Length: 560
Image 1 (cartoon, one colour):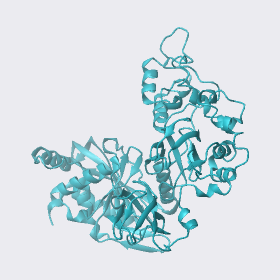
Image 2 (cartoon, rainbow, N blue to C red):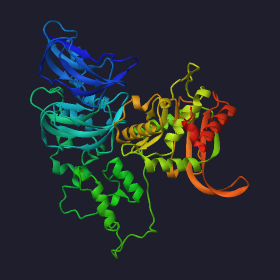
Image 3 (tube, rainbow, N blue to C red):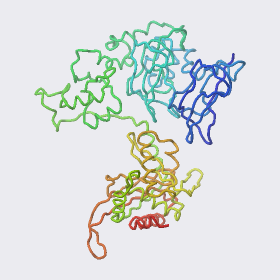
Image 4 (cartoon, rainbow, N blue to C red):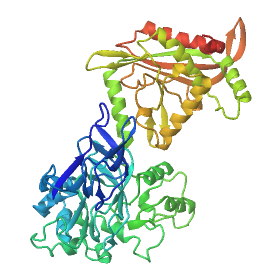
């Protein structure tokens, strides 16, 4: 018998990675040649991958939703003959085989977040299987621990959930690759953990993946496990190793009063969402008792604290509600990660590399808004409600052929401007986790209702997280609108590598002089920014003036 490593092939032009969608096999299954193994999704399509050989599935790599790089192992097969890999090569992708050679040093070496503490050593000696944080997405160097699904002493089955971790793109559930007993957990919720770090120590039957010949196997055991109850009050080990222990003791102390103040220096456990909500409410988590696992503060705990008038460890003796003018102390340091970090990098790149020129023009939107109201009142039941954006997109689609240098993407490194015949409009959309730009493709081929349908479809997909990569890339010009919060004027940042962005502001009624008389009209400013390397001020002004003409005389939008 030999080993055959099936690696993710190049499933599309320029594709560097693909998302695992659905497995058709599991370890132990016998597969025939050309039998489906897994579905993967690229930027353009979902592809079914079949087995190039017959054999028995030894292991699979990647859970649904995980990004896998082209060339990365997906399936290890036991096959007749020599196969295409040695035993050592076939074992390389396994979760943690490297620890077998030198158990304790290997854990410290890979657990970047806790390298200075003795806890990884304890993990390596406590159990004979170390579960390490896998690569849960392309380019992911670390992930945030969101929630533990197990505790020390629990017996877990194979594929039983161990923890939830959050990457830049999604929250991923990690499951146990083996059955055994949990002897150590490395990290508290909210902690960033490096890929390759040991996060769970398990006692399993058999050799596991850590050498049983490790020196002094029993000595560190009490330091990490020490039986769940004593762990909380075991300061005798090195402090960093038992730092999470006090929080773990919160739920087990049945006599602990509600809303008790934590000890000085004791960090409350809470998810990023709870921390943000507490910050918005002006609540210090130090004074909120947690009812979740390991004393973790849940949203319901915040609700109870606020409903009580904020009476906790520092409640006034009178028992009255907290004063609206009470002094607030302390603060939070929040690490910028995930989508917010990607947004920050994108904005920094745009402002650093693009010399912006901003142009603002006033538009009389009285007739346009009247048309919008009329069309909404007379629309069919299957037609969407119209906002101003479909009219803007229609106006841009009519004007851009006269200004092809604006409907373009600029390759800084190559010094090449890629002008687009099709108008692909990015719609800056605020989602629950930050700003995304889904794309309305070929706007030139859509009428007002078609534009409205596409805007609704792609923005909804962006907000609920179902948008594909194709729907979030390839725009040639972007619209950014804050709706009724649009303000008087703003200076939009260009969506690199595009060269222009247009931003309508809110409509306000104000008196204007028209035909020698003062009239109340619905006025709206249009703010726009252009890449001054490509677009001259004159061209920018002409482009916006033509859009203004169409919007002020909306009948022209429907005349070819």
